[in-house]
Image 1 (spheres, rainbow, N blue to C red):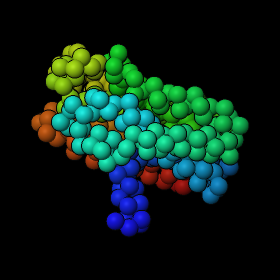
Image 2 (image 1 turned 90 degrees about the vertical axis):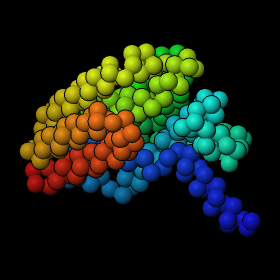
Image 3 (image 1 turned 180 degrees about the horizontal axis):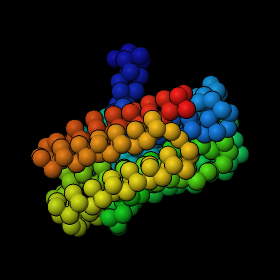
Image 4 (image 1 turned 45 degrees about the horizontal axis):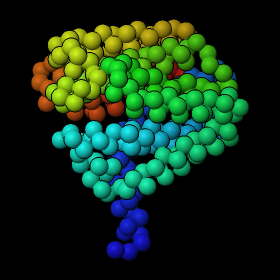
Length: 294
């Protein structure tokens, strides 16, 4: 095998490892935060190429670290689960040494990029990484793991605002809280797939503790709270009608997600990957349009 072929294969393996295509879940909301922050800071929706590219690099390296560390920490669990035992971190396609190096490199790159963004971003870079790493431990001792994952993705819009404004206004916190409960809600649905496995291995999750029916209701409650926080975000940021339409569309899409899972559990992958991906894109487009017509 040639060097180029081997490199291409490794890139594909690492892309699969971190599920790179799912970056859209967090990227949409960092873009929302950056658009609103740019409007408030500069009067236009564009923050400039330098800030934008640095934020993209920060998002990619932070997410690579988070996913890579999770795969590193969960190797023993993933190897026993039929749903996850073919991951590159488990089946030998990515060596342990390469996985560790991947995590270290991405962590260092994230800190370096944060330094280039501004002082506050740099000071918060290591605490951000610590929170991302902490998630990988929570399922081993607490069912709050679903909400800790929400905190991890909720850091994205906070990071976007810090990059543009160098501060954390209230509206960005409200947006992030919406992301927190949105993520917790869909992670609850996704974790239903591992309910029996979690019980057998004494892992902590809401489905393992309370069963299917209660999990569905807790997930619905989380999504209701998410929509309420997004409404508070739009109000606090003084956004317009199109932004409120975005909140309404988000509510409809979350309702559809809940409906898909309630009809049949086999719809969980569709509800998780498709619906949530479109939700972020549609919400972002509405916020962007609102900044243009407003």
